[in-house]
Image (cartoon, rainbow, N blue to C red):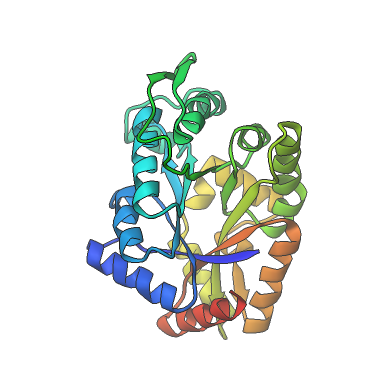
Length: 299
């Protein structure tokens, strides 16, 4: 299992590049960033990747509703070319409260919408011409950039059975968040692997992001994680995964404790079927330093 970590993209581009440089110097070769309400992650990655061309960079994830697949394909292929073939494009559905209340867009039948979107997006990422006339996603498009450009790896934030089948059938894998060890082993890995095998695709990537904190004060660390991530149990998709795990709070799925305890949990995640651990490092400055030190030793 590959060890990766999250890249904070808040602030100036120069600050983000320096943070990425510092993580690279710690030994990380794979960095991931979300697309929420801050800077555009793909544009940021084009600049980070030009400065630090050995890094693999991944979006976890870009919401699909505000971006037509033709536009996203063109942007992702351009970034992939700019950074030398090191992009993982993670896409997702966001959440109903965001899509409808903040963007004024439809969240109707999200799984079928994602399937239509991917049926158009995936071939365009490979540089193919597309005529896709779905019920809600319509694309008649020429090649997005020179055909010799490399296609980025495509992943989906897939949690439920329908989405896991779609991800395994049409993409290279899934990006997870708030999904614990038992759920990865019993639900995520078996379902997406079965879908990929049925579609004749290679074994899927399973990129699992979780909060992590090496600490001597686990109760305090848990409290801070629960405060900082309090919104996630209120979002239906994550709440379902937490319930499946038997978790009540975000800290219940986190990797929190001594160096030995956290190392053991990371090992269990690999055994559960994750192919990459995306570490959401949290805690005090000293706790973060201890966590990064441990992660660097495992790379």
